[in-house]
Length: 220
Image (cartoon, rainbow, N blue to C red):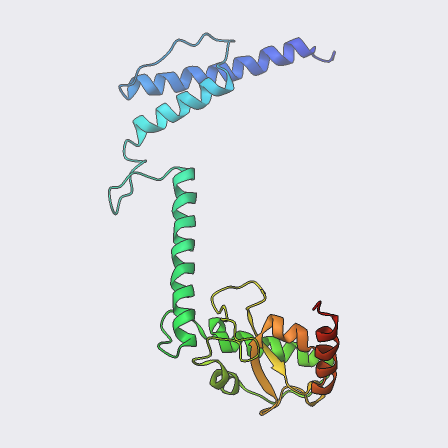
């Protein structure tokens, strides 16, 4: 049996598509819509077929663009994204405000335990202690006692930024006063990230030498 030519195959597909288009237009006419003329063998374009399908669905389901519960029209994709973005921003503002209130010891409203400032400092210190192999015996309450009402860095006197999730100079950090002793009660302090970087693992004597050297380098 000889193979069919591409023209014959295309003609057969066009006939099938046009037959479906004709059937669709008949349904539109039966539902009281306005049909368009489709000739057999000359199917509609993809854009036209999509438009006619939407038109048919509108006739079949006149309330399909309305929520049954509220009667409000469905949101477009752009409107839905904008509303979701607005919801996330509003939620972030509420959490930011609640986090600031937590530091001042006012309330625990609006934040889960994992979002409290002392938990974030505590869990970060626990991870670093495991990496560095230093002792870790503090609990969240030990860190909470240091955090409540601490609004400025005790080292530099700058205001601590408790409401940012990014690590900045004025971000609070949990420091080991004597690094080799690890995170144990009496050996921890909450200071700014900048103060912590300056201190690193240097002793008071070494920091004094650095200070003396810097003073000598200053121009008169």
